[in-house]
Amino acid sequence: MMIRAGMTAAVLALVACGPGGPQPARSFDDPAVQKLFNMSTPQYVATLTIAQRVAQNCVRYNYDAPLDLLLNEKRNEVGRGSLSQSGLGTQIELELDVSRRSFIAKHGVDTTAPDLCQAADAEALEGSALGAMLVPV
Image (tube, rainbow, N blue to C red; front, top):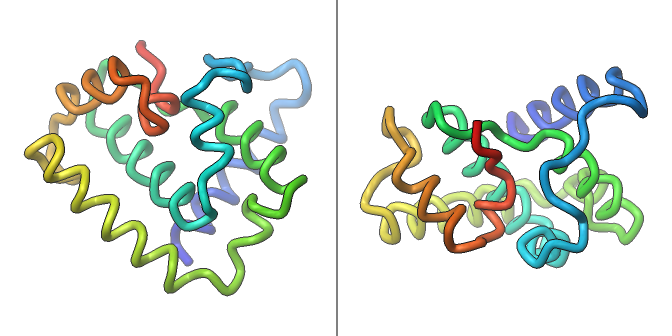
């Protein structure tokens, strides 16, 4: 529920920017962005949630909110965006737990650590779906 509320607030804030607002750092055709687009809804939400936490805990990266908005719009068109999250709360929470544990195993650090810059660098260099949401400052 908190995830959905946070995403809704982010979307509303971006909509207020209008068409001349900030643009995504990556093209929709970028392979890492396509990974995000093709994920199941629970996996997509979990990846974005972790990406937000990583960006919050690393001064060298920002979260790509314009890309989040673009992906959500495109995913809604095919029935996998924020509109499809209703009724998937349990699956989303389970996927978030699995993704968080995977992140810990991969990087040796929890998403709540105060400095996630090494993990952010690794994800960005890898070209991962999570890394697609991180924009170097």
